[in-house]
Image (spheres, rainbow, N blue to C red):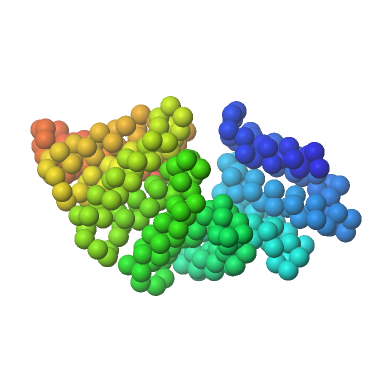
Length: 315
């Protein structure tokens, strides 16, 4: 039990090296499972499987696709014990986690994986109702919104509307006062959905997106949550690039400032994917830029795009 509890703590640990924290979690969980065998301790065995799945979903070491497949396998194993009829809360937690694994899955058909995630999130919501488990309900609504945002099948406009509906439901519980970090996360997701929205007035959708991102910065500040702050800055740069209202010249400069702010946090060594995305976005900004020397702007575009291209080859 202590080994499993240590594994849970290391999985959620904020301080220290993230890679090492997750490896410690895996090690402690594996040690717990040397005693927690299915035949003798089925409930504890199932709980440890879920903990192990959570750790593998966050694992940095090893191949990402293999870590996700392992997480899916152990989540499914836990469902041998966690039945909806006897352990509804635990069953719903596993369904939520399993759905997240499907959404992140690299193997198999991407469209089918997203469909599996949506179905599984909806199954979790059969137990995670607003009345019974409001916090868990809001979490799954947020996750369902993410799945609809990434959905390939179906009508794109309808999928985005479903995502917006799910995020807005989550925000009924995830308020600034009750859960500031989760509130900011869902608000950021909602902003992205509005930026991609097809229905409604395009100019208004972008304004809603920009306002939501700025509001999320009440929590996602540089000092306390630097990575989340950088993510928000990068999303702001995309919103300003697409902005209809205001001066085009000023909007592009705002996009440039936000992108450069994100790159103050992102490094090629520590945040390679995010760094490459921000470099790419900054390249688009320079390509659209009105202010400054045109030749210098084009050269800056080529430089940013080349850095992104080289990184993608290395990966």
